[in-house]
Image 1: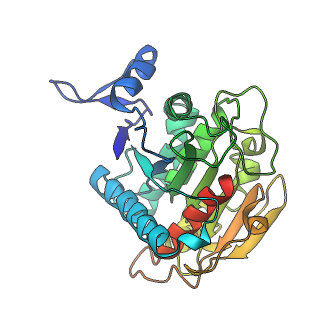
Image 2: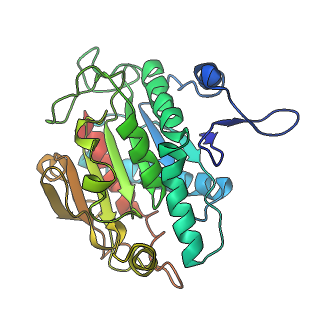
Length: 322
């Protein structure tokens, strides 16, 4: 597992003898090459972005927890993933300054920061270049045209809460040239990379975010689907989001208006396969209200996504990407 750390302006930080400092834009690719070379053994690359009030240690623990559950799920239910003969993921955790007090005003500030990191800062270009760099260094899963193995690596984005906004901004900004297989969505032309799937857990954004905030996603470097979970037990994107924006968020009520039709499905049990037709859409809204239920206090079940069922959904996206 590797970590990428951004400052409040969305600049990539590197450790030096005098403390963290921003990496100059013209050194980004050199820095990635020094610190983030995908290992040859990896079949899939997973980029994870955390949410509000999450430090680097907690973000790594959350990503590690999800991927550990995925490893167990794959070993116990391998027959559910017929196109996935091997699952050896390598993870990059994107950390950004999300720690604030737990007040409505602080929520609004960090919500705005998640956008400013990209729209006025550098996070979209940094993360976009990170994705392009990972694509340039990963094995091309389209050559040879066989099921992915050590000769082909697939790229998946996973976000939680406000981290979903950071990823959406980056993908919306980035340009790519698709090289992947699997989904029926046409591959975007003239782009340097393609993301194979985007899985957004309990997204802290208004339900019409994909028409208002991220209208370019249908033409973005995203070959696979945008899959977003929601749960009626999520108070953070219910009560807190209502207080900040006078409407509930995606994580509470699912994806609303989009530029293309939304597929609405329920989260499945760990032994219940997801048909290709369930996930092969530009936008997929997954009702996890019967799974994401645990959580007390101010956020409810907002962070209850580190579950075997979530791992099953991630593996299913990887399986159908082949």
